[in-house]
Image (tube, rainbow, N blue to C red; front, side, top):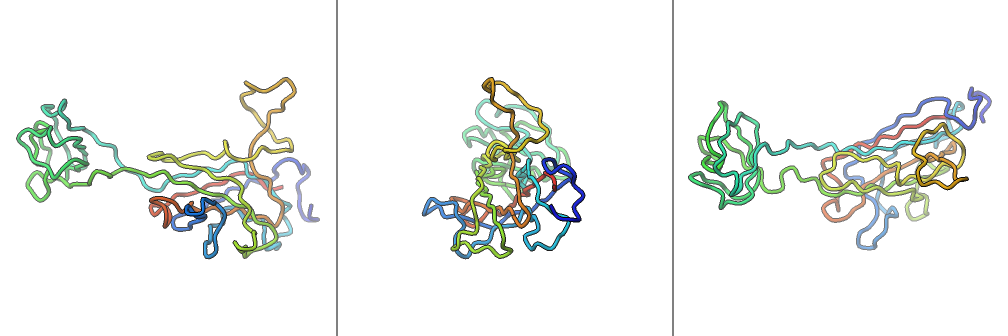
Length: 259
């Protein structure tokens, strides 16, 4: 512990830690090689910097016990679904409401550009049956066709790495050490990473469900201990629709404490 550090309980966090970063095109890994290791030319984002430059005398390390991933994109759910069952349903639509058409065969006297999502953009309320509106673009009814994939958020995987003793880690030198990865399921707004983080070996204040533990098994928190000089990086696994990153972006939040 540094001479100027005021922490009197090395096991416990002395000062709160809260860091965050927005990740978009910071890709990592290779789906072709089936690896999460950082490739040459890739540069994941810094999530937590535990004084990698060794310039802070009041830093003896810390612990990260909570990491959360939150997508930056959000979409309004459809207000009505038009199918063969709901075609005759009478509704009143105000500007901004969304109708999703699952089959064009459900149309009655109305018209549509095809299956997909339509946002009503008219200035006044319109009333009628779902199957009788003219959904095709450029007409008085005022519907905007959003396509069939509107509101779909693809599965995306984030990989987390630890570095030590460097402010300029080099992929080819193995400076990036894989900590864990976390997949955000399709159309899921946010996830918590505590289920995939490593168990903490030293005691921490904890409260939790002890069901399933053996008679001598300890209740253990999960998280990452960081020595002074460590960093945590995060990037988007380059695969499928995210081969160039997750373009809408996601914020990654880390909480914990300094020693």
